Length: 418
Image 1 (cartoon, rainbow, N blue to C red):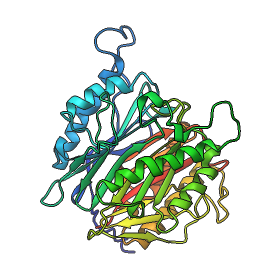
Image 2: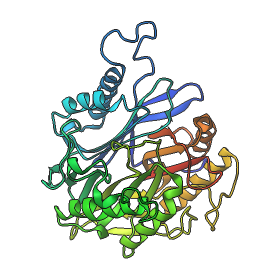
Image 3: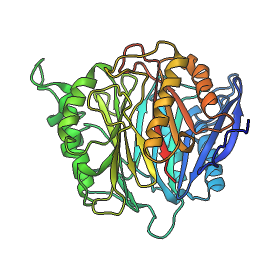
Image 4: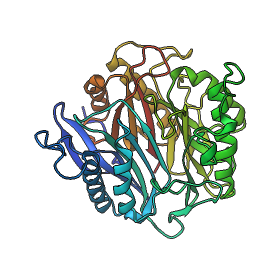
């Protein structure tokens, strides 16, 4: 029998390494046409000598320096430059990490930090690791250069210094938005987003915060570049309380009734955000209103965890999937063990990719959220069986809970469409 034909990849894994134990094939970066993705950037767990932990720079500054030095190598391998950054997401396990990390980040990007999202999580893959970073860059060409926007009504504290909005070609990136007060002296949460003091049932906290973010943060941010909510193609929603999901989805469906985006809901630690009182953070990717790149909702008849949830959205050469879990048509868990869950998720992902005109082999960003990272090796075996020999751009993060009882892993995927 002739061997099965495997088409050549449309993507190029960069700086591939095999991680032990488990022979896990990890790609530090992926070049896909005009895009460069650097997913799961991390430092080694031995940045600090345990015998002399306070000798030299703070632990998290050393960790950030090592991480950004490696990111430079990914840029060199992928043909991009620091100035071509489009978005950066960072996750921490401790509140001690962000400030020293920001010091290194500001220097790395020479003060031109792109739209950013930051929140706290339980654990990462490497022992001693406190920071995990995902970054996206343009391989810049005429008409596809990053332009940062700093709307005056969206002030950003100097300690982080990111740009709230960035455009590149037909794409719009908006930084993670919380219900933090628009006026610092009225915080921590904005008065519009919080319950009246001393009252237990004058509003639902997650609804108040979600509506505030959509009306007072996200919609105005998009309006600065001539966009509306209808052009949003992908949203990542970070919630600190898994029980807030139904009420959040109720508000979300009202605001995106006409044209919903692919949406992933990810739980954080508690507290999870820069503002300790916050319950939610939302970041988005949009296409330019009136541009050549169109928003196409993909329906591959794949069951989703939440009622009415869009499976995926294609925007030009990128396919954005919503969060995938191993569920049946009622949104309940379909299979119990981690291997079967991951295999089912990947089968659904492949169906969505095929419907959109691509293949799972063209994945450029795979964020894998586990309720217990001890499950990672079994989940990797499912990847290995489906894409044997391929080096993958994954980030593995442990979260306190997933929205479906019994679910042990959730996948958030971006895929290139050549």
